[in-house]
Image: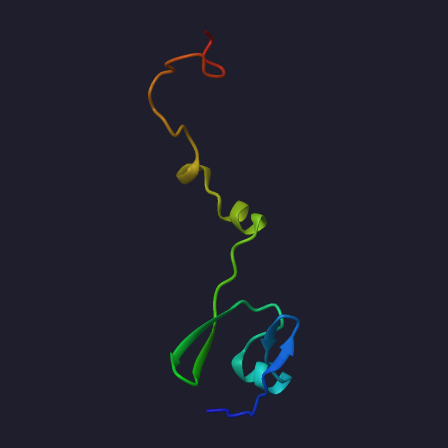
Length: 86
């Protein structure tokens, strides 16, 4: 397991730590990697890379009209819905 000393620094009204390139490489993360922090015990913090929210392009690429297409409501029109001909 890789151990590296870190220092907490003031960052505006918050505080932060800087991760060295070597540590980020060992973690397999980049500057844009979303992380989740979990307090394991007093003085122990776990950082875990999490999946980023999918972009619109990702969602559109995963769209399958056979699965996701069609009408949501299978009933006949009940009022003056758009395209109902009423």
